[in-house]
Length: 595
Image 1 (tube, rainbow, N blue to C red):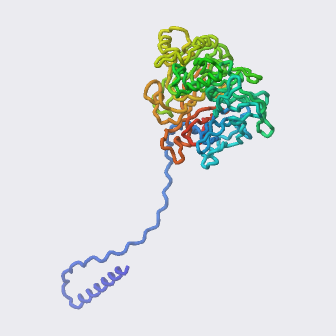
Image 2 (image 1 turned 180 degrees about the vertical axis):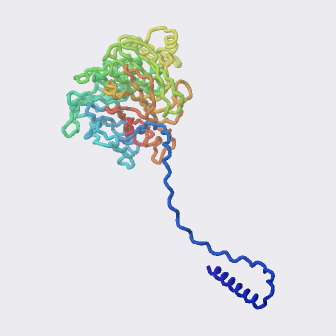
Image 3 (image 1 turned 120 degrees about the vertical axis):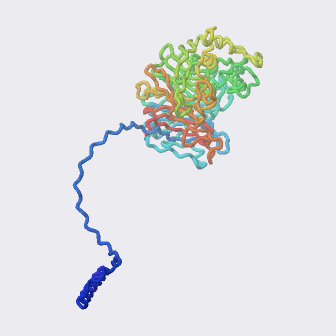
């Protein structure tokens, strides 16, 4: 603004001076002078005021609808419910009709690895049917005290008896003692309680008998009378050992189930069933059973001759379970294998049974008459794998191959034809019993009778083309009422390891090794109680040979070597571990609803 004023003043002076000069001289106008230089540019003016807003435009057209969203379900949930002392596994989970939970602490040890007494017990003060799905996992034991305790997420674990307890002098050799058939001599003390079954003797379920299998060579089964007090704890009445002498004893009594007609079904887990040629070999020391185990069985029988191998490896039903003298019956009809356990379907005819060990098979039996397992037809599974090798994804379609039909009486006649064979008959590289040539001739040409299906069941299944690649196939269970009503139409099977024949890139099962820590499979049960499909639902991780900082070689937040199972009324599944890959074995609950 100052420069503009100076320019105006200069112009005015120039006009005045010009006028004076013209008047005084009175001469002609001179030439125009040259144009002066441009003045300095003035400052910008201030901004003007904003204009008023324009009118709103009209709404645009609606966009097209988006694609429908997917239905989503919560991921399945795994919760740790209990832990047991170092060295122990959890066995014998059994839920009563009142949702009381029995389980055992098998072969525990102290922190130095010294064996301590096994325990048979029950959780008191809690109704497991009311377990909140949102319950948080019990912590992993960290202190020495926690590592040596039985810990539960709810209630209190009551020890009903420890291995060796005489229970008020009713068991002179002690609970779990393996004694001779006449009970005169103690052969050994077992630390391996496995299967539990509670058989009620009252409508309320507050009284009954607890049957416990002892997984040893020879095997045993105790029966303890129990009554529940108002406080919720249990008191012990009579106690006996089941007398197996009438069936020539048992071996390796493993897991089991209660039949729909309330009889315990204990399982002879004869790992050497397919190695019969070694039975009379005095140098066979590493088997399970070994030659020394066979001699213990001979001591049990007080016999002068070697026992017959074909008498061992069956499902054993305890009939008249509440009588003074329960009566065991061996059902040869379900085959001779390393039975983990069997489960009877609600038709009282269809039975599934698992075979523990390496390169084993899976079996189905259909009884001729409901409620009677003494006659029927035995089948073995043939699998077809999905187009993936991932254990967490690969399911299998199932077909059933018929092996044979027979009854206990006929099969026992076949068994007896091998009586009297001794160590003197053993020849290295040969067999004193059924030969592979006989089995193959039967399978291919139909030669002979069906004894091979029932006495050499695994070898017969393989010869018939069944799948014989399972690794440590363990507990097979259902919720009986859930399957009968269709509310929980599933059967579950634990696979302790996904290894060996399942991961060798050969045969019907070709999985990768990412689930060495085990898996649980689910089978949909059809209306005729057949199953034709198995799929993984809980899968452990890969094995870490170095272990974590505490020595756990499988992830502590997942399963490791699942073994015994139980299915609750609402469809949740209890999973017990049998593992050396967790410092402390755990009891888990799997909730398929993911709540």
